[in-house]
Length: 188
Image (cartoon, rainbow, N blue to C red; front, side):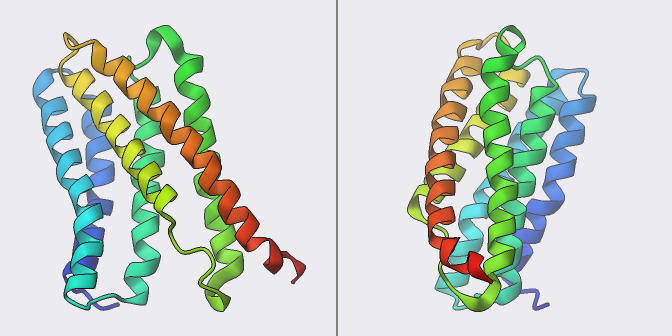
């Protein structure tokens, strides 16, 4: 493993995930939730910066190519599960739960497809739809953490709901796209 700046940023994002989750789970007051929100913003920015620095500094590594999608999935799956257990969406648990299930299913399924296709093909490279999907997921998560910190801004709960549904739709589209691209490799 080569620890360069892009890989460091990815590792930092992975380390932030359980910290953010614990801050949300254990928060009894606003200050911990504000800290969770700020840490989430910093961690989310590393998702953009690790790829940018890898390309700009020509520091792309196989380790980074494997670790970056894992960091994204950890951040998305763990924080969506934690947020589902909070007061976010109390009045509409089914409406918040359905897109979360779709997103988690797709993330695990695509990880399995990538593992199967492995290094035999570049066919499952990240698509622009998947990048937008990840952006929407992270924006929804951030919106909900903000709502938990500032419940007086109740509209953020609903904004997060719209964002997570938009992300779920793109999740289905990108998942189907990856499945179709990987289909020739199922003959093995």
